[in-house]
Length: 164
Image (cartoon, rainbow, N blue to C red; front, side, top):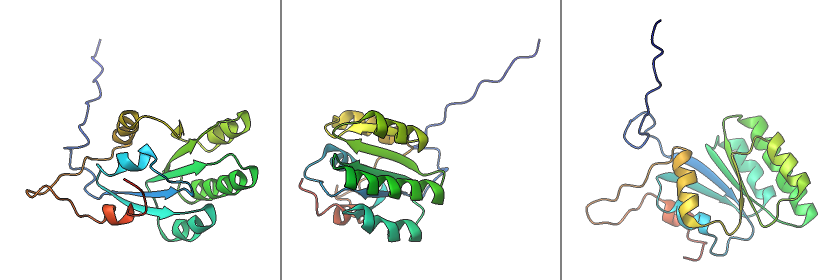
């Protein structure tokens, strides 16, 4: 009986397969000290912000994002607008990983998340260590600091609006 080859495990941090930083779009109008944004600081990524769903549309038309992080609030009207943006993102690029961040996931929102094939639906107060594991699971690489220990790849500027 022939042996079945096992799938090799690849260390995505060292494989050199994808040398471009991941592109991430964060859509959030309530970004006061959220742990997710702090977790993003440690990774090689090009992060763009949209401070509401409407501001996200032109960004989605111009750029294919690897990861889309959407803060879905409790207000039904805002929630509906965010879901429209997420459906647009899904239609534009089926490979985009979507992460929904919410304070409360209703049955209806959970159904939308399933239909959108959301990678993760997280509570807004998810611990930073879990967020870090999720980002590693989505093949983000840790940022490598230069000898002086100061990284400047533009991400700090992108996250300047966040307290931290």
